[in-house]
Image (cartoon, rainbow, N blue to C red):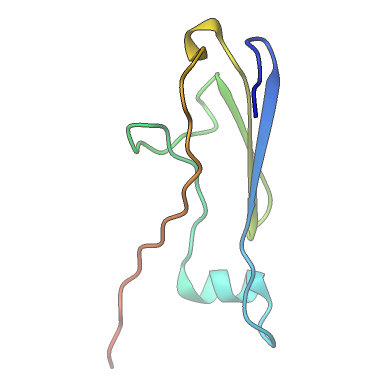
Length: 89
């Protein structure tokens, strides 16, 4: 889609768990964290004034930003990534 400078954009990411286990319980037990990263792969934080990040629950996270002139013709990609550690007893 095409969006012009000055427009506000909100992205939302929601994690779903398999049947029988609530997403919140699963995230707590596995130590999973949802977060947004910038183009350099650095985590965006609540203190970053350009991005407003909210997490209304453990399984959903949103980011809102207003596009700037320097964003013109910049292609942004939405990716998902999972990192995990296998535990053996």
